[in-house]
Amino acid sequence: MAYKVLVTPRSFGRHSNEPDEILKRFGVEVKKNPYSKIMTEEQMIEEIKDVDGIIVGVDPLSKEVLQHAEKLKVISKYGVGIDNIDISYAKERNIKVARAMNANADAVADYTFALMMAVARKVVKIDKECRKSNWKKITTIDVHKKTLGLVGLGNIGKKVAQRAKGFEMDVLAYDLMPDYEYANSSGVQYVNHLDEIFLKSDFISLHLPLNKHTEHIISKDQFKLMKSIAVIVNTARGGLIDEQALSEALQEQLIWGAGIDVFESEPPQNKELLGLDNIVIGSHCAASTVQAIDNMGIISSENLVELFEKDNEKA
Image (cartoon, rainbow, N blue to C red; front, top):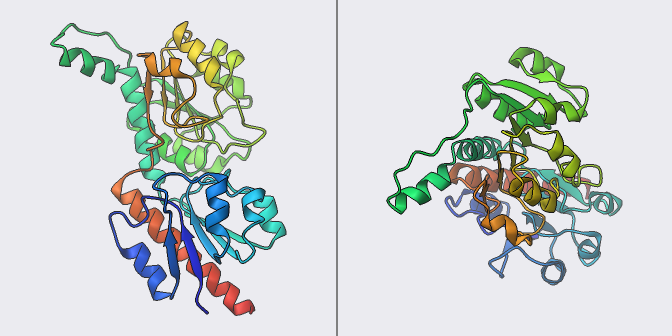
């Protein structure tokens, strides 16, 4: 049986033809994102009508979209975050969903640490001044032997913790499903209350999915708890931080700074953030390395084929 598949991520197969070869060997007919951007709901509805499967990035797979996908059997996520997919409705329709686990964890952990370093040491500001021939020394803050607080200790959070140990940092973590075996073996200390992360940490890094429980988990009250030299980093999902509260905290210098790779809408609607020099901004690019892109393409293609094969076995 020949399956038709929509592939939405623009970076799919950019550096390697292996993801396409995996699909070709299985006999999949592939159509790729024709818009050269993240698709809207309306565009997804048009493109998804006649497909059996989809390899999806961050494009919306809401109930409204999925209702128009009458033939859809499988969804293969190009990455791990599934907040753009209506999982409940997919389950109701018996549409199988797979994620590319660990495909980009190292890349995101590296970028998380890069943002921490850049904000702490004011790398971007120093670079700008040097380009204006201003060689005046700019005082910054240390990372070595400071306290890192991780909100969420899944695969990526654990990899950030590993990197922090190289800087001899004390690592605190808050997670609703604690992995005590990992914590005990790696020297990570769990805290009982989220506020302890904000009160005790010099650096705070978010590694959570976005849902109704985590939306704006960082807002005005949380910024008030943080140290004046605290740095907050978000490479997880836009919406975890109240961006207006972030803007005010940075302008009022309640914290040292922020490294933000993800926003509620991209580019961010709050243009004040773009003018501040104590924030380093990313374009949702933490996972955008050659190796991670290759891994995501290969794993998401293999997952798709595996789901189709299981579907064939049932037929």
